[in-house]
Each structure stands twice: as C-alpha cells, then as structure tokens.
Image 1 (cartoon, one colour):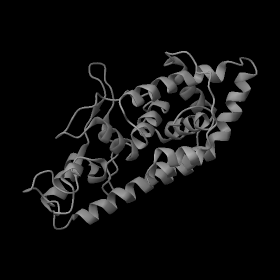
Image 2 (cartoon, rainbow, N blue to C red; image 1 turned 60 degrees about the horizontal axis):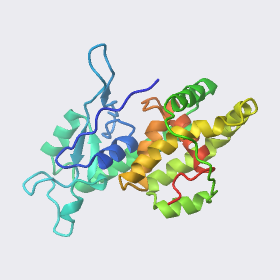
Image 3 (cartoon, one colour; image 1 turned 180 degrees about the horizontal axis):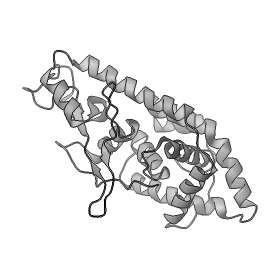
Image 4 (cartoon, one colour; image 1 turned 135 degrees about the vertical axis):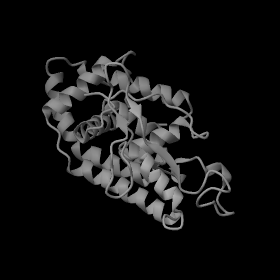
Length: 259
C-alpha cells in the first residue's frame, strides 16, 4: 500500500517544503493536459522508489531562460511553489523550448486546471473499509510518542484562518471533512473494545506535526506532507482520500493546526 517518499533534494535551491507542496497538490502527476503520468517509479528488489518528474519554472530561473520574469516579480519567489509546475521530462522540454506558445499565464492555468482535476478526483473517489483499515494500520505502526492529553476543540474555520491555508488546501479540507463521518464510525466501533484506541492512532500524526513545527513550517507546508503521511505515501486516490478523511477526523478533535 505504501509508497515511501524519495529523499527530498534541493533543486536549484528549491526548498524541500516547496517541492513537497508541489508534488502533493499535483498528486505526483504531470500537469500537462492529456498526460497526467505518474512521476514516481515503483520500488524494485534492488532500488528504492524514484521520482522522475521535474519542478519546471513558470517564470525562468535565469534571466536568459524561457519566460523571463517581469521586473515586478520578486526574485526571491522564483523557486517557490507558486512559480513551479510539475511536469514529466518530455513536457518540461516542450514548454521550455516553445515559450511563446507556453506562456507564463498559460502554464499557471495548466497548473490550476490540474490541481482542480486532483480535487475533483478526491471528491468523487470511493474508499472502502479495507482501504481505511490499511491506512489506520499504517498509522498505528508509525506511532512513536505518548498520546497527548490536551484537547482544545478549536473550530475548523478558526484553524483554517489561523493557518492561512491556500484555496487549494481549503478545498481538500472540505473534501476530507465531508468524508470524516466514515472514519468517526469506524473509530467509534474500535473504541468500544479499546477506549484508548483513538489516542494511540493519533500518536504518529502528532509526532510528524511536532517535527514540522520544529522546522518552522506552517499552514500548507505542514498540511500537505501530513496528508501524504496519513495516506501512507500512496499514489492511489483511494488511499489519498481515506488518509485525508483520517487527517480531518483528528483535525476536528485535537491540537493539530491550532497554532
């Protein structure tokens, strides 16, 4: 079920947090219309998973590159998520070799359309009890810290506002909240036999969340990798939406995203 993430690497000084957000919101697929190829090679007996996609610049990284940035575009934003689009190698070459055809405005629209497609797939995707069991088993296996005893019950809208989630992430929050009752029913059934079960399930998420906070990440930069973890790093949309629902179950009930 799980696709362990390849080691994050800097690419032209693109921070790992920006790469993670780009790959996560694109569902590890090429954003080019009609392509949407999965950009992660599966693990083999001799090699780990490997990323084969490329973070392409919308405005060029260098002043002589395709689609040079306008004077009013901050240089420090060149390597940020907002100026990147995930493409396969062939389509990266195509858009950079024909910059007059693939303008910055056109690439931004391709990216937005692709991320909307991902969101729509999550809304309509079904997951079953086996998918949910697989995700929850994964989380239980990754538990490494003691469960928290504090529950603040901050309202979801307050958490969204406090974390300044982007519109893309807000869509995913809404999708996960709509599917959260399925997780609530499942966890309640398990808790009848083991009242501490929900707390133990939360441990692994709190561990990852604390690590991200310690790295001074916030908002989208925490949400996307935490969602990927909750989904077992799977490329399968069934697991992606199940993991999103599990994340939203705890989003409603504990200190995740409260500060």
